[in-house]
Image 1 (cartoon, rainbow, N blue to C red):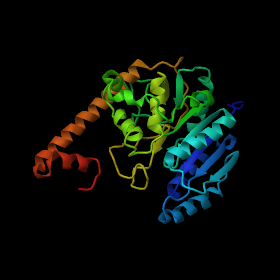
Image 2 (cartoon, helix red, strand yellow):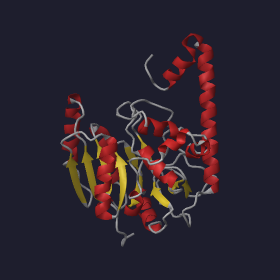
Image 3 (cartoon, rainbow, N blue to C red):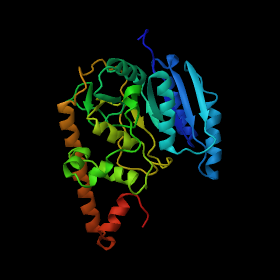
Image 4 (cartoon, rainbow, N blue to C red):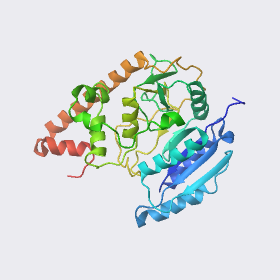
Amino acid sequence: MSEMVYAPVVLFTYNRPIHTKRTVEALKQNVGADKTILYVYSDAPRKEEARTAVEETRAYLHKVTGFREVIVTTREENFGLAKSIITGTTEVINKHKRAIILEDDLITGKYFLQYMNEALEHYQDDKKVFSITGYSHFPEGNKKLPESYFLKVFSSWSWATWEDRWALFDPDATGWQQVKTDVDLAYRFNYEGRQYNTNMLLDQMESHTIDSWAIRAYWTQFRHDMVTLFPNKRLVDNEGFDGSGVHCNTKGDYLAGTLLEEPITMFPSEGVETTEAREEMLAQLDAKKAAYKRFLIRHYLTHPAEGAKKVMEKLRGKKN
């Protein structure tokens, strides 16, 4: 990769100085970090109580070394995650034609940058590929699958794309109303009924109870019938399920995995969903749904006075 043009990394931070440091320090250990420009967007505090943590985060960021260049943008007003990512990604990708995107709770393995850059180079002319991710839905990999594969699933836990693909991103999620009336479309958008993407899309576009750029990116990829490249074993892990995050502020059923510590050498020939990966993904989602239902039934039987509605609220982390 000596002649490789390394894509810049765009990192979005807020008020988690410890998480930010772990993210940056892991990235510094990557092969190719010294050839990579690191752009950091530090959002302004939304509330006064966040100011100290934001300032601590910024103080650390201004001392970061180990990259080709470090460019820190400190917001004077609070953008929120969605606006911050959409705006910052657009600025960098319009300048460099491609970019790798991280948030401040993602820990990368040694060969994350190498994989992302090689994949960006490999699929730059394949217009069916919407993005690349270092995340895998299989914590320890899947023995039935190759080193990397395509899914019609988007991942916001590390991703990379090109200027022409990002130009397709539709912040208005044009046509989102169809998920309310077109049962077949909603079924497909929910990955054959295994996910709850329609719920998120409606929460974003109709009730405005969430502020998610990711569900709109997923909708964009879905509407254009495109794919994302995944590694079989994770090159990135998420440490944000510890109660520290604004959007992922409770512990869920997320399973940490062991990061891959060797290069990925195999890439699919073209941007078409890998049949075996789709089958394994559907099977995994079926297993998770069955386990969730069993847990709900057991909980309801042992806590009948709570009622089904209260049980559901409890499982979702809401206060009774």
